[in-house]
Image: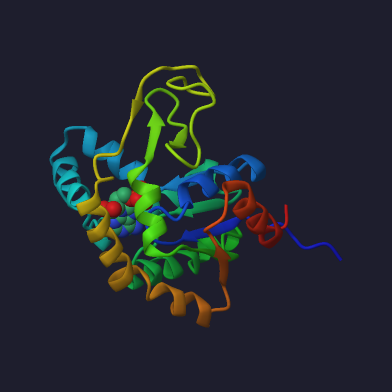
Length: 226
Ligand code: AMP
């Protein structure tokens, strides 16, 4: 009997574990949206709004944005019509209160009726030294936002984006050594308790995230069943 394709997913893992890259691949394969709360927050941070300024300060220091804000973002995003055929939450929930709020949201009559219950939490496991090397070397196209890495995924032609041929690249402001150390500490203290949380609910699927991108995505493909 063939496995049903999983379409309601959470990507969990330390910063630099490849959540964004793998969520993008999954999104293309499954035809559903990858919802990166980090990208949504960076967008708000650049908007110049008062809330955006506060968010920017937190992100730039490698701190987490308050749960109340994140819970609101998850609620608004999951209810958007374009996300009703499935979702890949990349970077949320990132704390036990956020996970509990997500559970509550998904258990509501409306979400149940829409068949939005979580199918699996993909936990990308990567040791700290990998994470630091991955984050410090990463950059993206300023135009189409395709992600690259100096060592692991350089552009095919130096200085030219493979996808849109743009010649300008950017790095995230929070991708500095100091910030990564603080993001890793936050992961251990605030986010890692989600591992036993989802394990108890039978939703946790561990994936070794240390290999090349296509090796990791193949492991994920087998779990998700596409
Ligand atoms: P990411 O792009 O997932 O690495 O997220 C970048 C930054 O956005 C994080 O370091 C946090 O400051 C913030 N952020 C993203 N998602 C969350 C979340 N669910 N809870 C709290 N902060 C978040």
